Length: 332
Ligand code: FES
Image (cartoon, rainbow, N blue to C red; front, top):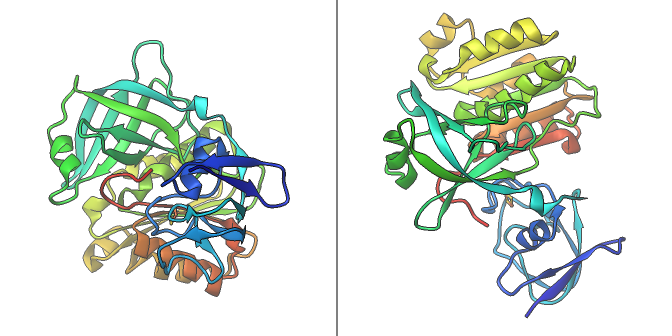
C-alpha cells in the first residue's frame, strides 16, 4: 500500500510504495535531500518526522529526535522536515555503456579508470557527484567522478581495491575496450557556488576523487576562494596524484596543501603532518567560523573530522558537507 509523504509547511507531497524508504521515495519523485551512503552510516539524510508513524532501525548516526530517511519506512502517511530539499529532474539521470579508455594502477591498491562515453553522448554531472556501475548480478557500486564536468565525453574514477571485494576482482582485470554499464549522476556533494567563504577540503585515500573534481572545476571557472586541502594516507604511495595538487598550487590563488601521513618517515619526506587528518585539521585551523568544509572518506574519518570542525572549531553544522565511502553494493 502506498503512503503519502508531505514536506512540512509546503504543499509538496509524493508517494511512497510499500517497502520503500523515505529517501528512496523522495529521490524517485525528484525531491533531493542531503544524503551520501544510503546505508544508515553517515547520518547525512537525518531529518524529523513531524506527523505519522515510521519504522526505523535504531541508529547512532541520528541525533535524538531525528530519523535517518534512508532507513525509515513509513507505516502511515507522514509529514517530514528534511534538513534541506530541492527539486531535481529525475530524467537528467542517464545510463550509458561506457568503454574503458585507460586503466592504470596509481598505487598498489588504487586503480585510475578512465571511461569514455559512447560517441556523441555526454556525461552531465556536477563536480563532486558520483556514478553507479551496474553489475550483471543486478548489484551496483558507487564511485565519485574525479574528472571535472567540462570533460564530459570521459569520466575518471579512482577505485580503491577492497580485499575479497567482488567488484575489485573485476577492476583488477579491466583493460582498454572493456565495457561497463554506468548510471549518473547521483549525490549532492557539490560546491555551494553562491558562497564566497574559504574552503577546507579533507580527503582520506580515494576520497580525493570528488575533491579533485571540485577543485578542477573551481580552477576552470576561475573561482577565487581560499582553499586548504588536507589529504590523508597511510604511506606516501597513497598520495597517488600529487601533480594535480601542484596544478592547483599554480591555478588557485590562496591554495594550500597539507599532506597527512600515518608513516612518520613519509610525513617528513613530504614535509607533511604525521598522524590523522582530524588532528591535522585541529593543528592548522584554529577556527572554522565562516568556513565551509568538504570532507570525503571512510565513515570513522568523516565522523572524526565533523566532530572536530563543529564541536571544537566553531563550524556552522550547515556548512559541513560530506561524502562517505562505504565499500560494497550500493543501496537504493
Ligand atoms: S545515513 Fe542515510 S544517507 Fe547515510
